[in-house]
Length: 496
Ligand SMILES: [Zn+2]
Image (cartoon, rainbow, N blue to C red; front, side, top):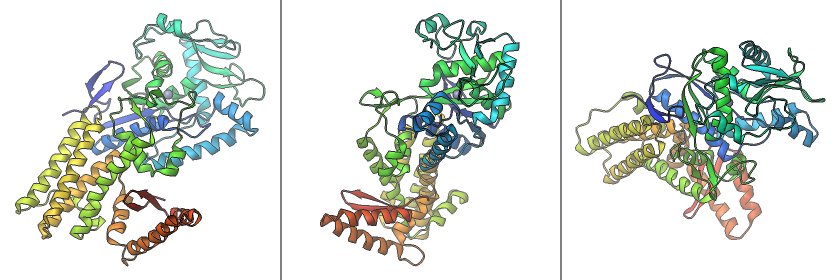
């Protein structure tokens, strides 16, 4: 069965057939690095990571490219506000982007080009577009002539006349038509600039993606992702630039994730109702935020609130507990679980152990069926929870025979693998859970942690917040996070 992807361009689910069989080139618009990113932005980084991990799981050779916009009005303005250079702003927020992304389990792309490293290529493409009669020079700027590209509006499904009615024109722009957009911006005094045939200036935002996506992916993009807020004008403009320059289809599948809402309103910097991931990570481990972001189908708008995160924390704990408890009860270690992933289904005679192996296999088929259907993570999640329940029930039966432990390791391996593809379980999950459940090699970590947490609980009971925070922060420095739940404090080793 083929994977199906909902293509924004055709407005229907299509069988996924990449340009080259077995290989996938993915591109997603990256951040403009002038601030911390918020949970709405985070969804547009997590969805491509989920797609990438799943396609790899399904055996594709995936190349993933994401740009970093490191020159833009917002960066220039932020630098002015703070009296620092644009380089200072870019350095600070690129680093923060990498850190926060990693905390959400988002892997680094295969290529992460920055706009300022590609100014020459951008100038070359703009020259080519002018030569082909699709752009014009006006007052030191270069604009794309939208009326010259007949396909304009095909992605957003609107005709240019309707789009024109809603277009805003900045008086500083010297363009012939409100829909025309800037490819190259002439520099104002004091702004960072690069030489070009049209005088000193810098690239427009839209052209960056046209240059950096196909440039790294052999001319075509199999899957181009981004938030639905980018369909118009950004992605419409990318298509106009790339297809009028190259004369061929630019992207095969357009995937757009829906927005994150707060109290029914779209979360946005301009709305002032945003929560930065950085702030959220102070209270919640990244894996919970990751769980929250993949628990719903990517085309469904989701609402954000601490209640939602708490719910996800409980749901994720149920999955993890099923693994921790089973490891503990069966006397298994992380290596038994990971080894079972390579070994394949164990041959088993015992009916109940056989039943668990079967439950694990059917959970994986159901997971694949949901994920193949336009990455239905919400359905896929039900397969994980069902398997967790089957593991719990099996452990409760009490058999500790060798066949039982083989079957349990197999089922845990499958559960862990699915959680790993969705991005909220990694090696650390297993190691940390092993430490929590079994103690480390010396068997000391678990009991010591119990002791430390008991001291902290005493401090809290006496309202000695300074001591209790001291303990929590000290543990955090050691890579141990403490979560206060109604059943007392839980601790986990986090990725450092
Ligand atoms: Zn883009």
